[in-house]
Length: 210
Image (cartoon, rainbow, N blue to C red):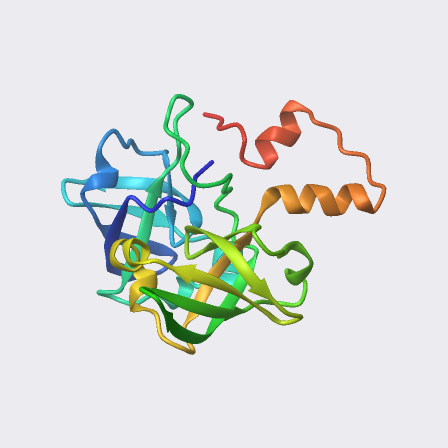
C-alpha cells in the first residue's frame, strides 16, 4: 500500500527489454531487493540496488495499463516506498495498481495554484466524484470538478515543486488510479457481496507477502 505522497523525484537512466533503471537517493533508505516502490503510481518490485539507484522489471500488464512503457532516458518520475505498518499516513489508500491513462487537457492558473483538467477513460468516470480522491502519476489529489469525460484537480505550489506534475503540459499522458473505496461502493450498489478474506486483502494490496 501507498499514500500518494511522493517522497522523491527520480531520473530514468535505463529503459528497455522489460527493465527500468532509476537514479534515486531518498527511497533507497531501508529498501531491499523484493521491496515495492511506486513509480509514477505503479507498484513495482525492486530487482536490484545500487548506491545511487535501483532497477525494476516491467510486466506486459504494467506496460499495457500505464505510461511506463513510454518512459525515456533522463525523464523524471515520482517515487514512493510502500508504507510500513507503523508509518505516517498522509494521503489516501493507494494500491499502486494503475487503472488507466488520462491526458492533460488544460492548465489554468488560479490564485497561486494551477487547475489541471484531465481526461479519463469512460470506464473510470463513474468512480470520480467531487471531493473524492484520485491518484495522478502517483500523487494523491482531491477532485474539485468533473464532467462526463474529464475531471479537475488543484495543484498547489508544493505539489508542483515536489512532483513531476509541475512539469506537465497539455497533451501529456498520466497514470490514473481511482479511489479503492469508490470501487467497493459501486460493487455494493450492484448488489454484489464482498467477502473480506486474507486472500481478498492480499489481492487488493492490503497485505504484503514474502
